[in-house]
Image (cartoon, rainbow, N blue to C red; front, side, top):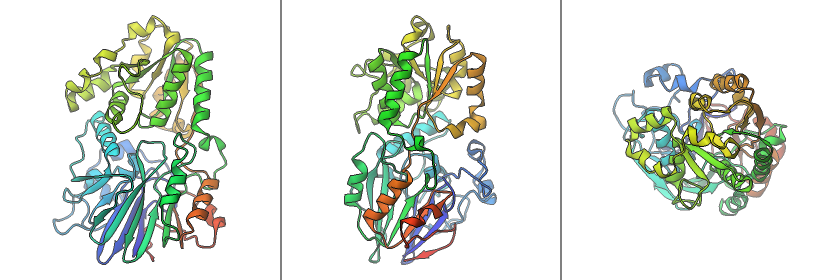
Length: 437
């Protein structure tokens, strides 16, 4: 068996790992890169507007023969792509695949990816998509791939156990041990094979010293409750629509403080799509503290790309600006940059509070400029309540000690050397450098 890290070695994001055996290959993730070779953050929105040939010429697409749509027809270079979860740095290049290459992913991840494409004016992924189920192995050519659920900051994240030719590889994907699903890491460690030939482990926080990035989600909930209680007027919350743990925390916090949680149509659509897979708050009679605000830009995108009927189901839970203005002290509203104009049209917005419930590093990006201007121009108090989606270094060491792999290959990290202290079997990879098992 041969492992090639096409992207993800010594960088965060853009994961793409090829596992090769007996003349066949599969890919584990196919993500959009977040940084260039100088660790300068890329404008991923600008990249998504480029053609497949431009992406190839700029080195954004991994150089894997027979995989992408701009290449001549012929036998596909890989038998399939296995996606660990719905974050774009793990799936964002899949739309450039050849149509005949199947993509394997969880049903919840598929729904989130397709809804994300709807709100960005794109059609669903074309490829033949095969649903993955926790613990159920899939056989593709010589490979047997078993998905195992892990806890991450997005719904339905998988690690993979890949077996072929008597060898076994564990690929963790992104994971943590401080979210709401505390027992999930212990379960993964029980079910994953011990002494595998290789462990490909994400190391986003390796070498990091910021304890807030691995704070318990329960602590974030407590911080939200305190802020909701102490803040007069509207509380706006900037957070990811895919972070279902955070939305649960928001809902529990509004229950404790007598407020309403106001969602945009996109977030409401994600929660409604996932409601049969997990007990997640969503617009319904059961969760009577949730309302849906029809932001003009987001609602228009849904009407254009998913049909007006995609909006009708939320009409019983619709809330208007006028209704929110009747009692701003009762409103907690999820806010995206595309909704700033809507927020500015609210009465009594001066002196409100914005909870930044994302990584603080995003505040330095161009995408945050509109939000920061809104905060400054309306004298809005800004607070930070967040925890990350990645395991801290102590948890990474715990996983390595428990699984006892023959080789540990850190990826999705700028500091792979920080994991060397975990043992003498660390292989620090370079992109495109093959590792033979």
